Image: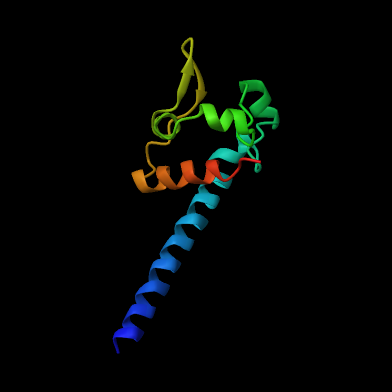
Length: 108
């Protein structure tokens, strides 16, 4: 009985982690891809206009800190009073953490 309970718990955790990954991918597609592109290269029309960095580039990834990425998602980005990225303050901390992890997965 303990083995069955352990297996059910492990499958539940795996399903929860899988759901978070799916949510992050969905959030990326709905909120971020318009500018950053599906692959994170930032080569969309809007991304080029705003000067989006190529998030798939290893050097850009190395320079990007998780806490700074999370802050940018939550609070947005401005440069010289010009909005570069709107804040996504409606996302939970868990959603933001999952998005940052998703961005890390874009590295080539």
